[in-house]
Length: 272
Image 1: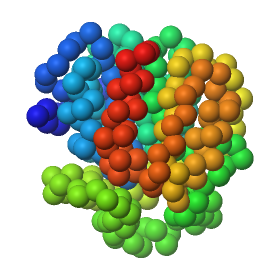
Image 2 (image 1 turned 90 degrees about the horizontal axis):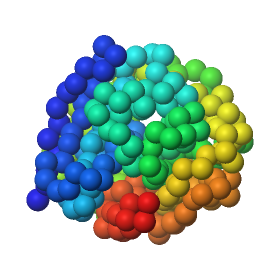
Image 3 (image 1 turned 60 degrees about the vertical axis):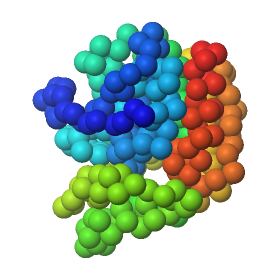
Image 4 (image 1 turned 30 degrees about the horizontal axis):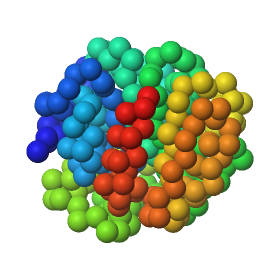
């Protein structure tokens, strides 16, 4: 069974954590981006299945997981360019890219701004529509006038509440501890700047979506109470070369329905 074995690499002065699958073919590559508030261990449940026919490189995006934070990168537009920088630094010629959750908007902006950089994309469970269609705590974080109440909370309490909502997933202790260890001090509140940038960046993305020719697989959870499924449907309507799969599960599709998630992604890679 292929395991996730994290390591670190300096990219533009930042310590960026990544992991690479050790076995399997080398003729197909995929860059996997960490969701929020998790880490690259979000792929623990799908890693072996996805690595069967593809070389995987999973990354904690700057400011998330266990990678260094830099304030100027905390927006989808800024992160879209850094994703390309990561791919360049790791020697990925034209990989598939997987960006659930916070990766959704950054991946699509990267596809619009660097149209020939990636072979295809898998996105979903991330804010995408303009006007915004968000719910629950995410909607509160994006629109809150004052973040002081969140700074008064213990960061592990916020993360624990989030990961306890991953119903049906018997989370291994190594995964839980990695998630909790990634969010210390005021880090999780500082990360909210990325989410709050949706207000400016998603209208920009809206105007770019019709021009994205790269094939895009959109995966959404029908019962997502954080990023309503309307976001996935919105992307499918506006992207000219997309496929939509709605899974009867909540927000964390990659962990709540790992077999189906891996099947959808592997099938997508096989034809693209």
